[in-house]
Length: 250
Image 1: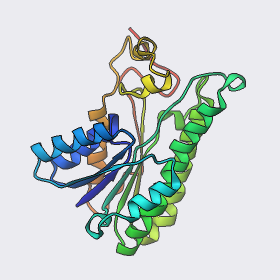
Image 2: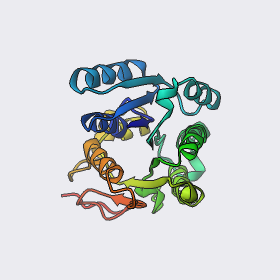
Image 3: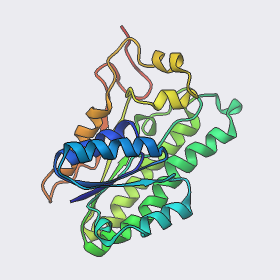
């Protein structure tokens, strides 16, 4: 069994790659940071008796996505699970003060990147009449919050694309699952706030946030259900969070 995981150099993607390897799956891991991917490859090879294939890849680059994936050896194209995890938030300004470069970065990664990878991989699944797509959304794709504007918009788009994908692929026997995490302590806020570690840390103060491993466990649970069972839409938050807007801090 083979899983392809985008954005695997950190966070949910890295934890998911390790979870699949732990269960004996071969994994294709993609990401922009070569040294992080190489480190992950070494860990998987040294710890688990599975194969790993690394691709340094920016999902925003349509041509690179197509060329790199199409160049995979035939064995690696028999992908059973695609985890569209690559995504980010960039900035947190009111809509009338937003940085357009931040907007484009989020749209190009969260929406277009997911589409580019899916457009290449899905025909392989359709031809085999099997497969499972996991799209990583967000509670920000369920409720809009103050200064979330474009980030929320991209995750609402992921939600809609996932629903449409499920309908389109139904006749081909392909499962589609959306996993929508709430507040999770990964590199998410470090990236959103351009490396401001103190500001990023403040996001998670006063409550126990989700961890990357929590999401990896849920991904694996969704994938490991019987063939006739599909978990369509999963929203997961820490105990202290009600939705994208309300978090109780002690």
